Image (tube, rainbow, N blue to C red; front, side, top):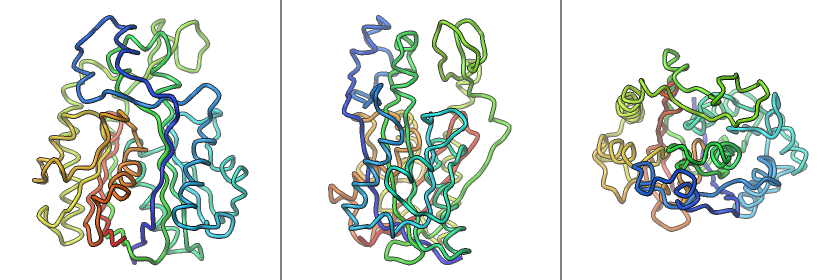
Length: 332
């Protein structure tokens, strides 16, 4: 298939900013290891919706690229951690709010923290096999304010890491910034190692008096860490091989950002310097799937990502059920 082009990216971050004291006061723990690297994060407000976040991000994208969204968007693909309504993704609502007229709308459930790369791959399949010529990819992370900030959860160590935000991208069938290759892998044997738990043991869909929380089996934490340190480099090197490149050809690395240890290990695995790894963990926390497009925008807007840059994207999701990588040649 001919490569599609990543024309631009944009983001929206909720106005509510939370520092580490928000969690320290609840947990009583002053120097927990989970605080290392993350100082601030944005939380979706109670009167804010995933749809409204996406609308603001897409409006910003349209301004940056001078798009007429009613005319210039043939495909809309979304991924959201916690949608506004059960059973229903955000695609139709976004379309209604912005008066889009896409030929195709897809709300993805899979991919998690690397769903941006899954969406790139899906967009390529659609744009190269139909009459559609353009797509907007929309990553929404909403679990920080909706789950991890709840009173029952604030005292849990893992709750201080996530942050909310929306990252969007505009891709076209042809253009100046080709997506040279994508690699997506599914590791189904790890799919049940992330769980939704409540203190009273009920299922998440059952009513109760306490909040549910997204958690991992503590007996498998060491295995999950080892998976991340193995699966991500494997995907990164496979993408490099498919593109005919070596690590020395990479200008910048952009990954999901679960914690500073993973960031360091992934960067070192492809022999890159710290300044070549674009991330916002200290300011935004773990942005889940929204991290890659938000960090791409940061690198482009602050001038670090320059024309003729090879961008290596990658990461893994949940407890290791998905891993992915991609290479974009950015020419501005």
